[in-house]
Length: 165
Image (cartoon, rainbow, N blue to C red; front, top):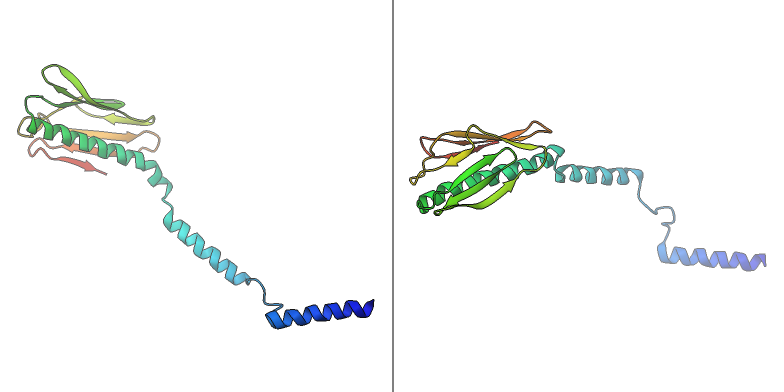
C-alpha cells in the first residue's frame, strides 16, 4: 500500500513538472506589486473624484447660471417683442419671469432649494426695448450652510449682465 501511494505521488509530481515546470514556488504576486497597484488605483481615484466643495457648489453654480440665462432671456425678449413687456420678479426663495400682453401672465417660476437664498436691492428686473435695464442691480445667490455665494451684476450703462463666481 505504501509503494502504491508513493508511486501515485511521484506520478502527480512528475505530471506537474512536465506541465508547469519548476514554478511551484512562483505563484501569486509579491507584496511590492500589490502595494504598487493599490497606490496607482488610489491616485486614479483621487484624480477622478470631485472634491466635496465642488459637490456642494454644483447646485449654486447651476442655479446662478440659470438665473443669468433667464435675465438675459428677459432682456432679449423685451428687445424682440417690446409690446409684451417681459420682466423678472425676484423673491427670497426663487424668481418669476412674467410678461404682460395685455394682462400679466407667468412665463416661468423657479424655486430655490432649502439652505439657499437670494439677496437683491430691487425685487423687479426691467429692461427697455433697446436692452438697457431701468436700474443697475446686483443679485447675490447665497448658500446659507457654507457661506459661499455667486453674484450677478446688471450694468445700467451698457446693459451687460455678468456672473461673478
